[in-house]
Image (cartoon, rainbow, N blue to C red):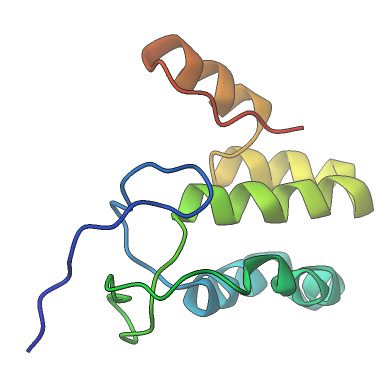
Length: 116
């Protein structure tokens, strides 16, 4: 069995500490947002295409992992923020990708993963 290898996120450059592929993350998000916002999520999955080949493998399905879960959640949060701001606030708190989390990260770390 091949071991998981360390890889940095293609978006933020930080280590991928929770190696889950975008397809598995998408399933998790769809389970949370339900059918009402599924189309918004699905229409924006192309944001995660075209990244370099990765040696890091998903812990669930062995697919390549290119980005960290934080960056994935952050991009979906931006989409939801446009289509349903009230729901996006709940999503941001649960998946820790809202401005509140950014303030926390900026306080404790020297990097910025700012959500716009």
